[in-house]
Amino acid sequence: MNGVLVSLFEYKAWANAELHAALTKFDTRRHPSEFRAMLHTLDHVNVVDRIFQSHLTGAAALFKATHSEQTPNLPELREIVSATDDWYIKFVSSVSAERLKERVNFTFTDGNRGSMACEEMLLHVITHGGYHRGSVGQMLEGMGVNSPPDSLTKFLHRYEPERRLGV
Image (tube, rainbow, N blue to C red; front, side):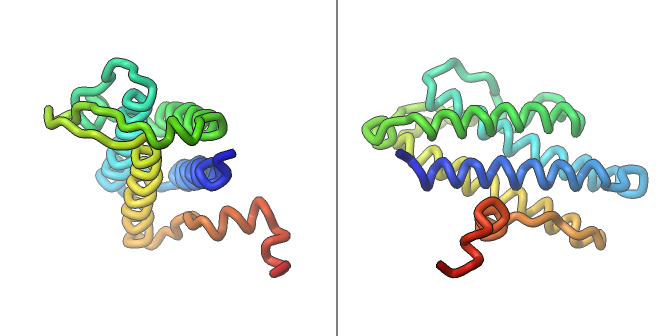
């Protein structure tokens, strides 16, 4: 029913997994401060994902800031991100068109009030994550490390190779 949203969140999960896998091979001893900065950035993305998950479900706020009090290590972060990505895929797979249009009032972590349609929240989660994955990719490239693929076209053609046929 929500084909584009499902595809976008599957892509997000794939891109997150690719980046986390690349970071398992990163030389943390040679670049410890850069690695911490990348983890902090990816933690921020996941915390924001989880904040918006709370807004979408009406659950109580779990975070007082847009980052964890203590940044998780990479294996912990990978597990949390994977679970969060799975939740979003399930949510967009079953959410109704009416629910997507509903506005939700919420409070940002800085105390300011906000209101967004569920669909807008979902698009924020997608674009926010892509922005910060790109930042981490730039950090990797700046240190001479190839960043993993992170584009919707790569994802679509990898998982639906028949799209390359131009049919």
